[in-house]
Image (cartoon, rainbow over all chains, first blue to last red; front, side):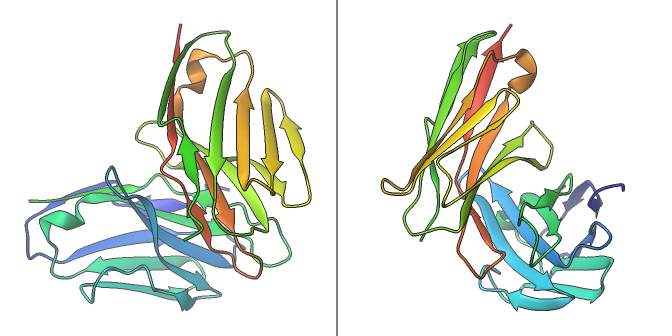
Length: 115
Length: 111
């Protein structure tokens, strides 16, 4: 398996622009997680899905952030409009779900810079 | 918050030495996990220890868990330059797949 795939790997945009980050989880994994990592705040869970359904979005910072999972093999995290303080590395992770050890498999991340 | 807190924040050692990192957490857990993150990469799962276990080994890794003190330690024996990375502990609560990560220990192994 190719592991969790994220795109793009790097994104530089200007304040006010819309940003869309993409994730393909490992095939057969039931859970998908979106994290944000910064030096100041560490690794923060933004939202997670079970079988394509959002379970907990309490970590989503503001209404400017939205996430979707239209099918089992694809998820997006959208920021509209983007702000400089959104600059961070965004990770997607997946795990197999209930009945299995809940270790998470992380993608390589998307480094977002908002100017 | 049941966030894990790693200690020390940074650790620098020579190749061949042992490295010990500690993690403390606040609430009861189902299991505790350790992850490694190389610079510019995603996190990689290293080892999981359940709340009813006290010690676990995997290769050069040894993890201990003391639920009475709400703490865990990760020992890397005979360290190598390739072990240079940040190490994170993560805790969960029973009934949820959600993990809460600490801020990590940055380990540097000098050749």
